Amino acid sequence: MSVPGFVIELRDGLRRFRRGAVLSGVIRPGDAELSGATLAVLWYTEGKGERDEGIVYLEDLEGLSRDVAPDGSLRLPFRVILPLWPVTYHGQIVKIHWQVAVRRRAAPWRIESEELPFEVIP
Image (cartoon, rainbow, N blue to C red; front, side, top):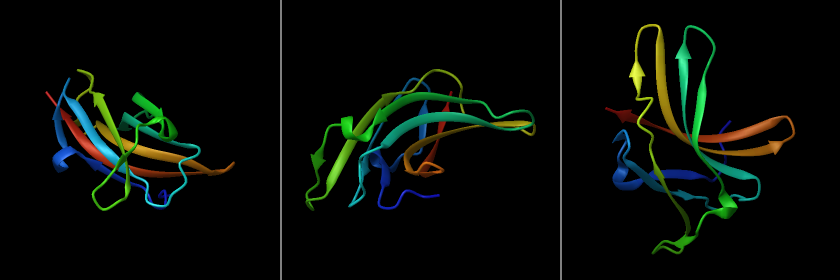
């Protein structure tokens, strides 16, 4: 389920990054509540076998610095150095995906998530 009001933007609209590069962007929360919301940069596997996941960056949105855009809206900038491995992979048996995600517990039984996929290349 999507997190209402949150928009994830990567610097310069880029969606492919070399391993070890800096991934930066902003979260635009709009009118959404920041309490209990987190920002994660992670990879996960898809395909044969069980899903694996690695979180390389996790931050409470209330802990991010705040910036005001020229239009007066709130922006929460973030900056992460990507690891060398794993890189994005689209094989027949297994795939490795990367994403930036904003997650918030909307109720004890429901987590809302806004996700933006990107690629890490060699």
